[in-house]
Image (cartoon, rainbow, N blue to C red):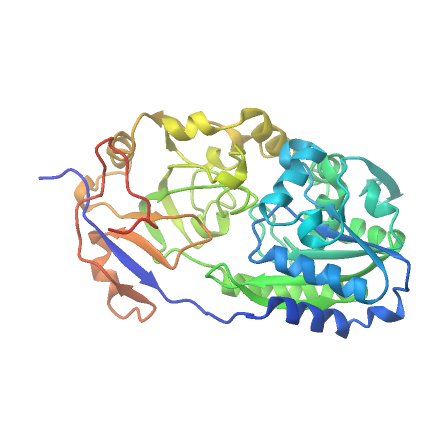
Length: 423
């Protein structure tokens, strides 16, 4: 008898609303802002581009560039990603290149720098850092995805405000704002810094993106600066509602095929795995509780940045070998989350990890344990789950079993087949 649970493939049905013509919708939303009344021919417009793996971000960004050109203005793109990319201008430009955002593809310059200027001081005494190149533009257009933050809780979490603060604040701004959280609430910092940026840095508008649970563009909306706070609160509620989720709220072991900065700011979305308030346990404030997490790999796009690996209890040797500890440390120290960079227990093979992890899950015998395997926290339409969940399928119209229970798929080297690898 196998000492592992049998697994079967499960398909989840989420809200699938999406924007098919992202370029056309981007133009329509920007036109609604009537930018021609504020942006004049010959003026420069800095357009932000972040480090998250936003669906079709290259197409969306190119549409913003083309719209600005259509006004007779001169657009250029600035990386807005805090300390990501190893905290270097070259590293940040390289990240954008992986998203298809290059000077050639966008039809305008990419101006990357880690230098900032201090444009103001908040009532709390916090210096407001702002990207040097963006500070020289006649106008700044904020482009960003709105979604729940992996660490902060509030009416505004990750979105246009975070792009103004952390993104355009670069490494120096990100450090000071994260440090300020020890003394002030996230909302106090956000509202104070954003007010300064909007008032002092000629922000002309925002383009908010919300994605559905299939990692597709669900909504694109132009937002005037004076409505950033009000509208982002509303969009966050939609983003939370459309967030992908695990099929079940409890798991003995969650196996994640890959984590990375293109998946989530914390490598793995804590809103999905239930570790937003405690790195190693679900709390009463989380909707999910996973006793143990096993991370099997890093995405290529994360370039060794293993932020979030410290939220797992187990990993394998090939993942440990792929970690760029310097880049990971820079990101986690900047975010005041050093535990996110800590190395979990390492075993040579996946078989060894699963064997040992299941022995730490309490009285349940390994074959009867509740195990979920996912590709990553963005892609949850199809997952593998153990047969202990079979009784829970009853009455769940959002779940469809699409295979019979079978032995865990270890290869000749003792490693699991990824969720997105089919027979």
